[in-house]
Image (tube, rainbow, N blue to C red):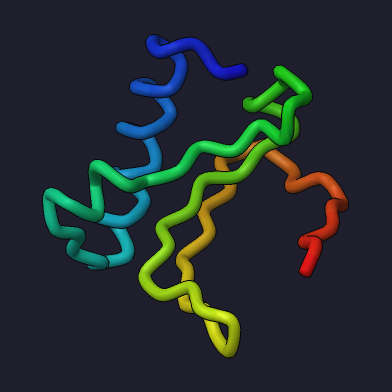
Length: 79
């Protein structure tokens, strides 16, 4: 699990990438920003940051952010 301190550091880094890409997030969206470590406790190496805009049974819209040297591990989404 990501510590609160590490979560906040990664969140700020991620928000900088959104800013560089000229993607403007609302305060609500910023509060919903997800930092995923996939239970591996190596978020800087194996993790993913994501902003979920829409997520239904039929479709989803997300922005995914990988930080430098970060890899998203192979995983499954169970239906």
